[in-house]
Image 1 (cartoon, one colour):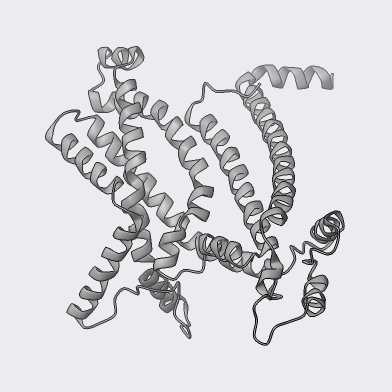
Image 2 (cartoon, one colour):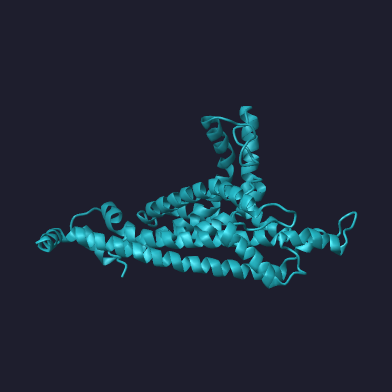
Length: 352
């Protein structure tokens, strides 16, 4: 009897049962993807460990000091930090890997600084800059792509394309230095420091609104610099894809049924053309995190990009490996977000 009731309820609402099945299938698929990317992160991180030891020498941090240090003194400094090349590399690897597995300790720099502290601090510094800039440049690029594609070869389209071509070819250093000069001139003009040209925050600022205003004063210029030099690729991709879909048969059919051009674009062509754009944006996040090196250097932001250069210059092997692991995690997150966005944007996609 109870089985009959259960079957009756299920058959009475087949759409709900189908939807629940799709959700369960999607969760299983994402779990498999997560496990696959987790394996990739472990392999990539361990491979980076051996590559870093092949090209970097932590001993160089102590060579040439005044007064000079003996080999024994240098070894006594490096061995407790698991950075001595006199120890077999497999022993170094196990000490490092077991510390991560059992204590989540990514090691120390040649000078004794904690890698965990550096990553946890610099990760959020970069996030304040990168996430906001990514959202703005994505929205701006998509909006311009839709606007210019719907006005193909008209004056607005030509102006939009010309502007994007110019900004795309502006060097990041030139854009950042230009913004710094303009901000200094503006501050002098109004007689108040409205924009800060260096640093991510001021010391001694307390309270929610004062901290918020201070953050905005610091983040505005580097964000504008990233947006100016980065939105054009999204603009051109969105415009090209939307133009292809505007001329597709299903859009022509929708217009033949009485929809205006703008309605057909919003309801049909735009969703389809957004799929490759969403995929590109999802995969661009890790590159922006560690790729904003010049922007962080000019504006003196101690983020992940600047830290990556510092670790290489100082032969900080565990710092280099930690940055590589962070990048791999960002790639995995981007891939999973891409899968989710494809399903959300295109209901026809189902995971089998």
